[in-house]
Length: 387
Ligand code: FNR
Image: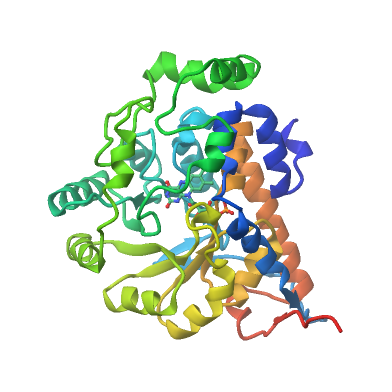
């Protein structure tokens, strides 16, 4: 019943703010420093307007999307979100299950509190996102584990050379490691649905949350100082490490966090199967360009490489704008995380359903019968400056 009042993806944020303790919500909502990139991600979509085509028979339209030899029900998926099990009981499993039932891709975060093997067993089509260890033996061991777990698509996130400025999460009372405090305790106590439904249920059935997949923090409780090690070891990664992974990983390999045309080309030449143009949802380098603004150049330069995008996608119209500018698939981060927190699997299904309905409705109003038509149809142009 509660879910029925959530009518668009933007409705999930205020609902999650009420449902979650402030530090947990603060981690999810956070963006770096001045939040310039966060806002740019949204406003970039507003810089384009549609030129709809009329009197096209769109009654049999479909938003099915083929990617990496797989057919998806919609051209969008769930972006990797770390620490999901803090906001939702068994968060990664919930999101993987919802995505599998809806037929859309879900990328499991390497910064998860659930072992990757459990997610792969329940949702064999889920993709795995890795943060690479600092040394070659560590990389080999991690990739070996991902292979053995049964994943077929691996996403390497490369825009986290160092941890982001913790300023805005600190303002909300969140820290890594998580420090128990009177504030955190009080915040939990006044939110009994989260306290019993997520926190105590997790504690009773699975113990204190642990990092399960990151190389340096594996087995470290979320309260432990070693979570910092994980990040500080990433600064020296280079294309050499990418080449190492490509050699070892037999499945599809995707690079996430690319914003430059030449990096996209290097990735393609080094054997990437796809890239996700992303500024990490405005959470890493404040002022990093909105991915949508780089998408046309990157897609044109890498016509043969599947180019995907995330950051600020909230509407069916956003999905279609990104597709029209060359994306094969887009990913949505925060809203699906909020949806899981508020309503578990049903919440995520509801959010996916809302976005899919928007895509379908918008396709009809644009005169699109299929997503293959979208680039050729020439339905988009940049807004002309007024006056
Ligand atoms: C993220 N993101 C992220 N990315 C990644 O590669 N690994 C990760 O573990 C995480 N963790 C994470 C946690 C939370 C709470 C958020 C909000 C984001 C970035 C994420 O995958 C994606 O790039 C952005 O969230 C997309 O922007 P929107 O849709 O949130 O605007």
